[in-house]
Every structure is written in C-alpha cells, then in structure tokens.
Image (cartoon, rainbow, N blue to C red):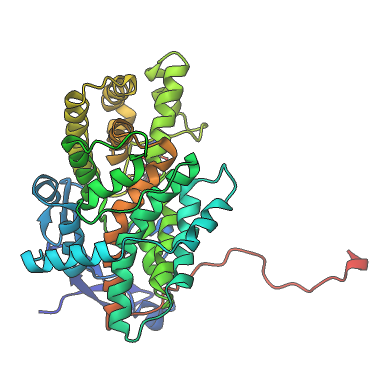
Length: 426
Ligand code: CMC
C-alpha cells in the first residue's frame, strides 16, 4: 500500500510519498515539492538526502553493519577473493566457476598498458602526488582506447580495462618514481599477487610472494570495495550523470578520494602518528588539540558521517593489523602510539558525546607500511580497492530508467540587483 506524509504549510496540505527500502529505511520523496509549493529543501553536505535508490551496498551506521549485495563484509573478508568481490559488486551476484574464470582471463588480457603512457608519467614533476597523477592518467585512458562498436561492448570492456589497467598503472608510477624498470603483469599470478610483484620485484632482488602479505592486501581491498554514496562515489555518479565516459567519471572519483577528510585520511593518520612521536609521544596533548574548537585540527582516522557506534571495517582492519605484524615479526612504534591514542580518545567525554570512533583509516596505514607501500601511495591503494564500487555505482546509475542529470538547487544569499557602475565613476 502506498504511504504518504502530509506537509502542512500556510493552511494547505500536501501529500508526499514515502519510500521504504528493503531493510526498512524510510525516505520522503520530495521530487514534486517545488512544483507544488515553490520550496526546495536545504541540506548542507547532503547529510539527510538520499540521491538515488541503490541495490549495491547496505550500511547501518547505528548497528555497524556493512553488506555488499546483501553479503556481510565480514564474510567476504574471510572467504572471498578481491576479484570475486569485484564481480559481485558489478554484476549483482557471486559468479559461478566458469564466470569467474572468464572474468580472470579478461582481466589478464587487459592488464598491459599502452607503452606511450610511460612518456606521460615521466613528464610529471618529481614531487607530484600519485593521486594527482592517477586521476590524470585514468582520464587520459580515453584517448588511448577509442570507442567500441556497441554501447554494451563499450561498457563491459571499459570496466574490465579499468580494473586491470589501473592496477598496472599504479605499480608503474611507483617504479618510475624510483627510477626502476617497469615490471609487467604475469597471468599465472592472482590479482593481489600480481600487484605486489609489479611493485616490488626487481632484476636484482626477485620479490618473494608471502601468503600473509597477499592476504593482508586482499582484505584491505575487499574492505574498501564499496561504501554507498560517499563523497567520491557521489562524484562518480554526479559526473557520470552528464553521460560523460566512464574513464572521466572514475577520474573525478579519484580526485575526490584524494582529500584528507576522505581517502587521504590513511596518509594523514601516519603523518599524524609520526608527528606525535617526533614531538615526544604525548597522545593526550593531541586529543586535547582535536577537542579545541578554535583549532581546525581533527584526529585523523576518527569519526564517520554514517557510523555512529563503530566502523565494522575498522574492527576487521585492526585485527588483521595485529595478526600481520605478529606473523611478519614486525614491531612498528607507530602501532603503539595508535593504540595509546585510541585508548585515550575512546575514554574522552568529547569523543563519546560526539560518537567518534576509529574508522578504517586509523589502522590501514600501519597495514600498508607493513607490506612495504610508501606513505604517498596509501590513497592510491584505497582507490584501487574502491574501483569495483565506483564502476558498479556508475553502471547502476546509467542503467536507471529514471536517470536524471544531477543538478542541485541553492538558496541565493548574494546581492540583490543593482546597476553596473563604469570604471571611471567608481
Ligand atoms: N576529531 C575531532 N572532532 C571531530 C572529528 C575528529 N576526527 N570528526 C568529527 N568531529 C567533530 C566535529 O568537530 C563536530 O563537532 P561539533 O558538532 O561540536 O562542532 C562533530 O564532531 C561532527 O563533525 P562533522 O564534521 O559535522 O561530521 P561529518 O559527518 O561531516 O564528518 C568526517 C565526518 C569523517 C569528515 C569527520 O569525522 C572527520 O573529519 N574525520 C577525520 C578525517 C577522517 O578520518 N576521514 C576518514 C573517513 S573514513 C574513510 C572514508 O570512507 O572516507
């Protein structure tokens, strides 16, 4: 039965339809509000605005739930491969054996990149951030791979190319930044093994693929694979809504992810922990600073727009971090600082009252350090993990029969009309 809410304004009653999601989430459909009342809604940061109907990822911020296509992320992190999770997100269901093999073959077939791309990399200034490079290079891919015959072919091949090539391009940028020979992908390696090998293999020291390192990367990427309508995903959808090509839409997602309040937080956490150590290790002082309203500083790796009890990804990441460091027999002093900081913050009334808990980025940097990823590549690692989610969300939005170009409105607060004054009279 259709449900409505009634808006009463100025003696008039307006019926607005209610929408209920498959997990009971409720929304008021205000799409006719302006036509019927002249009003728009105002919601800075879209904190209470649903921009779409989506069947990809379910999050419950109060209960700390995250599911991809209905499957709890905890199960995927334990049992699935990153490739299988990517297939699940993009196609809406788990693949059977044949489908997974075909998907693997397609990824392998598309994993090489055009050699001319190498020249592009070499012309970026030395100090360029890898996220800026990645965003530009993904956008440039469109020039290297012109349109295919049918739209369906175009979409399928482009999605596969992105998943296969962006991983190669990320490893390639690292190798070039170090002045090392590029290592090509090898078809006999898994998706995660291949990336590690392309990053760390050298003609002098062949890379030894360690089970625990591959596992850490697998879990890291699965935990990052999608997170419904966050800032970068909304950017992909918004840019994509103009019917731009997929490369350009993903490039916009990479640019949004770069920000320290979003994916850039994993790098910012390590920089914060390092600074605490360099300044004598006083965690209480940094917590005090984060609470100071006159100081813009925030505790990096804490807080989340949706999670208000705990971030389920952070729970898995923290456990995996402990296990990885133990099995690799690594002692990282930053981990001790992170633990102390977490303990102090979690007992602090400000953090309790504001529902601020460690998010996925609090421990992910320590995991990435342990597997040898340089700090300025951390957000690139997040981007590689988020690719399947961005692709799935882009595909869902372009397939939507009710698709509309994204075009929010505003409440104008500037000057009212006044006349132009010529320069000589000002
Ligand atoms: N340290 C100190 N205070 C904080 C923090 C923090 N990390 N996060 C939020 N607050 C305070 C904020 O000052 C505000 O206080 P008040 O209401 O007294 O003015 C209140 O909590 C609400 O903050 P908000 O900025 O309105 O919340 P938001 O939902 O807009 O922001 C956030 C969410 C993640 C941007 C924010 O918590 C933050 O800046 N965290 C640090 C950066 C970070 O770790 N980002 C990674 C997010 S998870 C990875 C991803 O998926 O992107």
